[in-house]
Amino acid sequence: MYVKIKESYSLYCFSYSGFLTCRKIFATNMSKFSIEEIRDKFSKGKDFNEIFDAFEDALEQKIQDVDLYRLLFWNPSLKPEELCLFGEKLAKEFPSIAYETYMWLASVFEATYAMYDNYELAILYYQKAAQQRPSELLPYLNAADCYDPDLNIPPFDVLMEFLKSGLKHVLEKKTLLHRVAYLYQIHGDQEQADYYRTLADELDQNQN
Image (cartoon, rainbow, N blue to C red; front, side):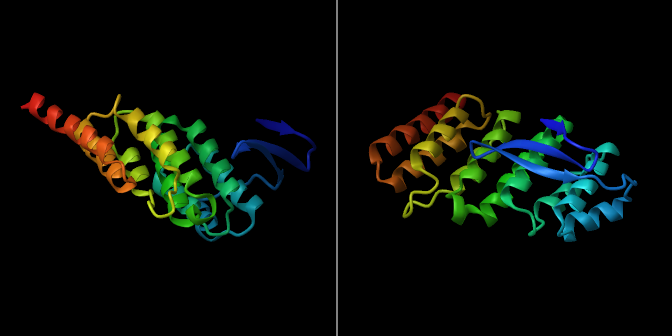
């Protein structure tokens, strides 16, 4: 939600890890940015409010270039909750690129913050991507690649619940079944590994 407080700033509130987080967004002159200026702010900017101004201007200009927003997501000065703010607002404003937005956010969190949150944000945004395109295989495979059996992160039960939900929707069920079987095997559950491998074999036979 967006709540007007004073002429000098507004309060932007969003949900992050189950908590309501609010940020003051200070008003500046709403001059239009060129594409190059927006790109520079996204990739090199360090002040949150300046980056936010450029982001708001990009939305006003109806810019739906995923590669441009990718620069924003990889900006090292932005905190996880700030990345979530930008990603959620972008996906809401332009539903047609919501899938790509969530996939990029997930990959950023997987590469940069996984050691701090045990892949919580990466899995969350792979789940959001899957909700946008339930039949796509990639969000499930990428989430599976996050698993570290030695540390059990992300938590095995959470990961498997997500992957199994995908079996109801993905077009390439055989590939996902084999990945589920493999994860059960490295987790030490050979019975479940054999079960899902058999399902994959039976599916292959039925298709032939």
